Image 1 (cartoon, rainbow, N blue to C red):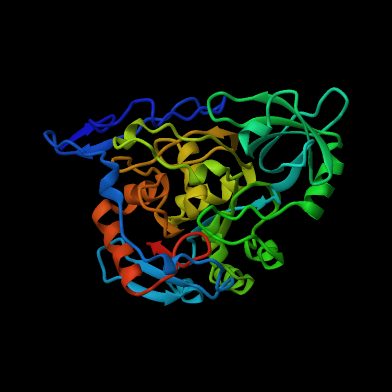
Image 2 (cartoon, rainbow, N blue to C red):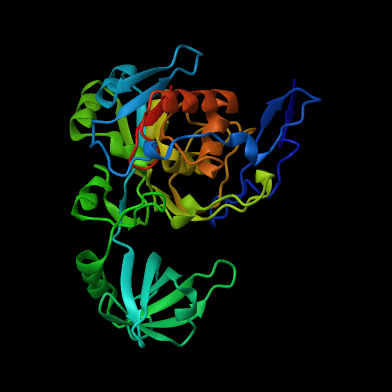
Length: 384
């Protein structure tokens, strides 16, 4: 066996984490000397009927989970609360405590045309104390620099156009605190693009996890939607540690990979934070021999971004651009609870890096054959 710094197909820049603290991390891959790893995106496709796309959730603690033993044991479908039995005392569950904001706003131009925006992230206020946001907009032609619009009843001005992604910088004639009130009253839940219906009152609770604390996400960390308060209590009673990270999920989570050689894909950045308290919990569990089980790709992205070569963590915050795909050797994560992800997405690549391409696609095939619900509001899989 030989140890390579990167797989032969990989772009050395693809795994760089830029956060002002972490610098870069290296990816080590154990692989036979003559073996070349393929990075064909089309190898991560799968077929599914549209009716399996969950347009509504079954409810917290009411979904189904496909249990996938890492030791090669038989896969089986379980009710979500039954996964508690798979955990051991001393294991550590890592969850994302981000909170989804009502980031979709509707409005009109000065001439009466209808417009829509998705607020991506809050920016520093203007000198006059007015709220400013980076936003995705539609239609783009209505959002030229200097234009005035009215969004959710608020006078809004276009300050800047980002050439690389078309996002706009918008200034609202409200303070950040006032704008938060407007969003809570007039904003809409930013459902994923494949859920083909308008949001409603039910989504305000359904698309928020039981761990949600810190507002900033425009998409839910959906693996956490499987957990009910009772499941959490049962895990803690069993002696399972629960640690929290924060990663504000951005719209880039739904970004399509546009190149067949996925190693050339440029990953979106997302803000994250790990506190000392939670780093200590995870490190303690690891030292004591407990398994580190991340809930969702977002929690996975945080801890693998921060972990050192020995799999230990230090408190840290920043922006991660990390892109995990087959060939990456996980440093910390022992188990992964995740939803079923869109074909040929960066998320299915992350799962395949952990579980293997053939295993992942076999699990997806079983999910489809058994009519499990897919994607954000759907069922999930536990690789442990």
